[in-house]
Image (cartoon, rainbow, N blue to C red; front, top):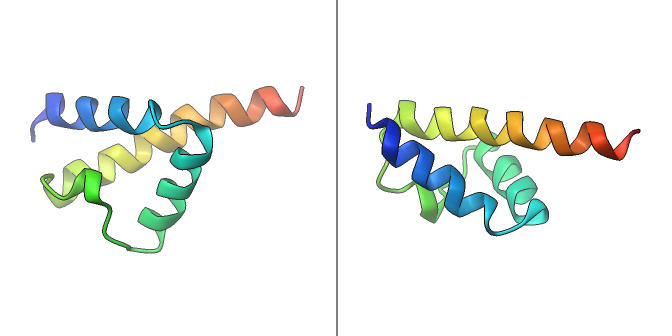
Length: 65
């Protein structure tokens, strides 16, 4: 597993903004192909999804305060 590729992908997606990240999470959860993860192995893409979920959970918890 290439941890740097995973981190680069997460950072690039996060630069797209919260709404794009939420849409990406939804698409990945539905099994849709995402252009940003095309060069990743399946386990790397799964790690990207988990990282995005973790990041957005912080933002979502702020919205409820």
